[in-house]
Length: 416
Ligand SMILES: Cc1cc2nc3c(=O)[nH]c(=O)nc-3n(C[C@H](O)[C@H](O)[C@H](O)COP(=O)(O)OP(=O)(O)OC[C@H]3O[C@@H](n4cnc5c(N)ncnc54)[C@H](O)[C@@H]3O)c2cc1C
Image 1 (tube, rainbow, N blue to C red):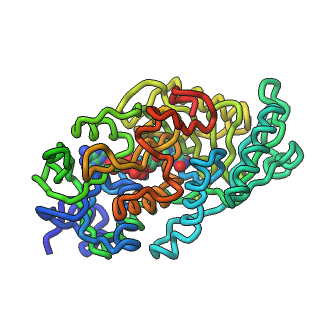
Image 2 (tube, rainbow, N blue to C red; image 1 turned 45 degrees about the vertical axis):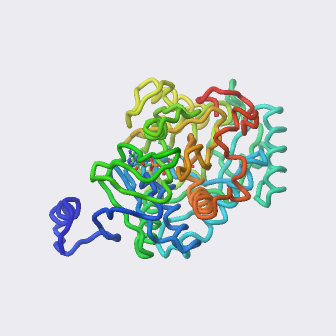
Image 3 (cartoon, helix red, strand yellow; image 1 turned 180 degrees about the horizontal axis):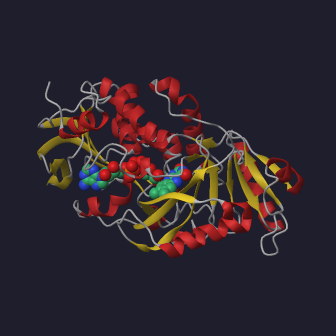
């Protein structure tokens, strides 16, 4: 058998001559029923559900780099379904239900850990807003518990409750939320799709679209022309660049978001904890590292690395909440390119070009959406109809005025 350069390098690095990837390494064929552009979490999940739920297996996933090299392997691994609006909450709750059965479904250990998420409140109006959000979650079948200060103290005694600027008043606790080993999600979906016949083609960059009479007939790639009946784009932070090749300008800005990991510490953080007065969220990995993040850097970029002012801002958020974090040493940090939509909500839609579909605008929150996004995108591509929980994720919602602005903050990416 002929192995790819990646496999040969991996064999050499690990010293295992028999090592081979959990999925095939096929040459691209000249034509497929469906091409998915982007081998991140959403692209791979879509391929998996197209094959498994709709029996469509003549599918290629085209990835310009390697599986898991994008945001699916760069995020802070948080999953949750604590949304307010009817356009969002049923979708994220479907995702949560899919997470709950994912490992059994694709027979891969993704370390799904429902350790809960606590959103802290720092004022009485914020506590009222959490009560409202918790009620909306329960109406959509999700779980939520409104905690007062004593309830938060019981869960997280290490927090700074009487910080003069940001006193902690209570919080919204979602017990079923948690964390998932991010890159294992890509690998699980990849293996599941591959065993059902999907071709996963790495090192294959899409450089253009084949268009004729308003119809998309395939793609140009760094490995040649590939025809397809349907082309589904799922390239997250590269959305604007890829769709520009189809002549489309998107309501999306690309920004860098950083993530941080501390040295390994004894178990202290019970689940995921988020600051309610700024951008800071933290969990603790099974190895003991504090995994945390904050705001986007705030300028448009396609670079997968950030800058020091945001590091300082994130660490200040951490110190305001839990001063003990100042004693921990930072081990690693990295960045990923976020596809920030103007109302903070995503798109799963057909485009005006026949046969061309778009999935993107995931902002900070697309990892938790991975299963439902794949499920609903596969449904759209297979049936031509939006899935019932994704009907509002339309590309034209800014024209029709049907924004899904969870926080009511308007078109400013860093506020979502
Ligand atoms: C630091 C950070 C922390 C985050 N934390 C969380 C979190 O805790 N919870 C949460 O829910 N979300 C989080 N997110 C967001 C989440 O990771 C993303 O929204 C989600 O992963 C995006 O979808 P994806 O997995 O398909 O993207 P990606 O993995 O980025 O996949 C897109 C793929 O498309 C490929 N591609 C691009 N252009 C082309 C082309 N021309 N041809 C072929 N392939 C192409 C890329 O190489 C890439 O592999 C975080 C993101 C970052 C960066």
